[in-house]
Image 1 (cartoon, helix red, strand yellow):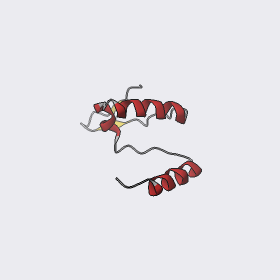
Image 2: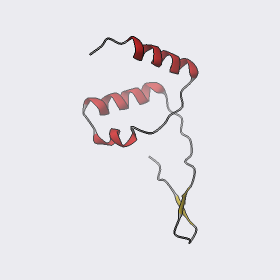
Image 3: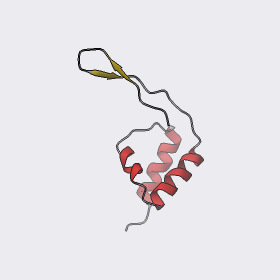
Amino acid sequence: MQTRLKLYTGDGEAAIAEEPKVTMRLGEIAQIIGDASRFKRTWLNDFEDDEIQVSSDLYELLSAYWQLRPGA
């Protein structure tokens, strides 16, 4: 995991430099998130509000899956 860099301008305000983009396979991400969810890792909650970009076809598939899943 890369460190977030802060740019100090001397005026008391810190500007956060844009984070570089990293490419990962969905299979890798799914394994990691699945494991973290199964073992209730608290760090997963830290990223709940983060936005990610997915392809439009994956978005459509995930949306359809979420709408068709059986009720609890």
